[in-house]
Every structure is written in structure tokens, then in C-alpha cells.
Image (cartoon, rainbow, N blue to C red; front, side):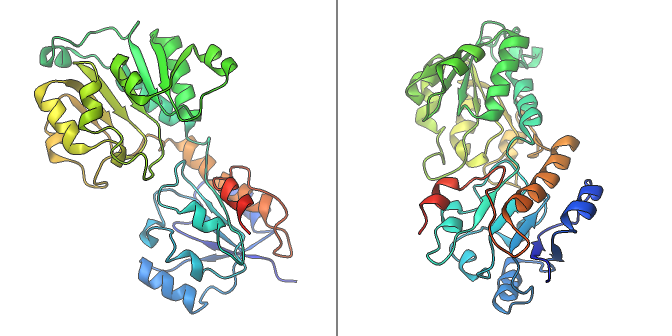
Length: 337
């Protein structure tokens, strides 16, 4: 009996060669995608160029993106045999996870590399929370040099930001406050020494620095806009390692120009991959190129996690035998007809 087919999107395996050859290839027949863009990829699906594959494997978050948004235009032309789309990366704004699970005739799991980048991204977010250089002090007399005792306002308390909260409190002596749609348990709050705020506005008013950790969706785009920034303390700072569109770029530039915001650190950008020339010209801005999760360990773990998610879901007869280790669309999948 032929092995189930897996369509490989993006660059080949780079790190986990032994696992790939001994575990993955022993179970699956891997077919490499050859399409340079979305249009040709869609045509290949329609013409059954890659046959009836059972899984889609994207091991590197920086490749395979030429296919574009995984949406209601693309998903319906997948073969009916597809059971799982296993991707690298910790976010999922480019994939319509409800559409992946909501097709009337079948259900498709979507999994990402949740957890693989937690340490790297939390370390990246930690650095600018305590970056009070003499340069910043010259720019704003309201900035201080020592972060101890300052309030770090975390927006979205997930795995990454929990690590950030622990590090900022333990290493820097910062007071941790947070806002999230779902409140953490009393035990977690006690462990982190974190104070919950029922509204974003309340958190913005008291924080010396805010760090953003929310996924991008229709509710979070431009979450930090001119109105939100106006609520913040004069001289406070903004750190964004989430998604660029969560912070309104025009409002941010205006707040930096007038001095209401004293410093900003962005690993993600509003018009990514383009970086704002206005922000780049400001010495109170620390800008990186969406590399917070780019540590070697993160890349290794992303690559193998996607393989393990496929192994967990796909049986030898193309049947769905279980759930991914890191599912994203579990709620929509379980609710689908």
C-alpha cells in the first residue's frame, strides 16, 4: 500500500535530518511544491499536479509565503484527502483557521509551532523594557535610568508574555500588570506577581511600558491607536513583538514627535516588510526585522514540531488517528459538521 503523501511548502529540511529520514520519510511520501507564486500554486491544485496529498508541511516560517493568504479562495481547492496543515511559526494571522476547519464535507487541522519561540521572543521583548540609555534621557527628562519598580503592562498573557513577566519581575524588579480577554488563574497570577486589569484603558493609564502579545484579527488591528496612546503616561514606552498592524503607525509617529511616547521598540512593522522611514530616522526607536523568534533553537524546534504534528494526526491509511500536539483551530474543528 502506498504511503500517505505530504506536500512540502517552502525550503527543504535544514536541521532535523535524522528525524526526517528515519521517522517522517518512513511514514510518508513527501512531494516538494515547485510553484513560484499564489496563482501558479492554485492552478497546480486545480490540475491535481501533486495528486491527492493528505498533509501540508511548511517547516520554515520565512519561506513558503509566496503562496499568500490561506483563505476561502485557496482552501476549497485542496484535495478532499487533506487532513492537516502543519506550519512553522507561532502566529496564524495569515491563515483563516475557521475556514480550514469549517468546510461542509471535511475538516482540516491547522497546527503551528507554538512554544518553540517562547524563550527567544520573550528575551527580545525584555531587552527594550529596560533600555533607558543616556540618549533617551536627553530626549525626554521624564525617562528614568533604572527599570526597577516601573510598571510593565502586558497586553495578552500567553506563553511568551508569561515568560516575559517572570523575567522582567525576577531580573529587573518590575511590577507586572496585564490585560487579556481571558483572565489567568489565581495561581498563575500569584506565581507571576501579576495584577489583572479588566479593561485595556485601565492598564494603559498606569503602565510605564507596554508590551504587546496579541494575535492579529479584526478586533486587534489598530488596537493601539491615537486614542489609546493618549491614555498612556507621558514619557512611557511601547514594545511590539506581536504583529505590526496592532499598533497604528501614524499615531505612533505623532506621539514620538511630540514626546508623549519617549521610546519604542518594534520587531514587527505596519507595512511589513517595509519599515517606516520616519521611525527609522528617530533615535528613540529600536527597530528589528521580525527576527525575535529567529534563534537557531527556535528554527530547529519549528521544523521538527511540524513533522510531529503530522505524525500525530495522519495514519498509514490516510485516516485521521488523533489531534495535533499544538492545534490552533481546535474549537472550529470540533464544531464543524
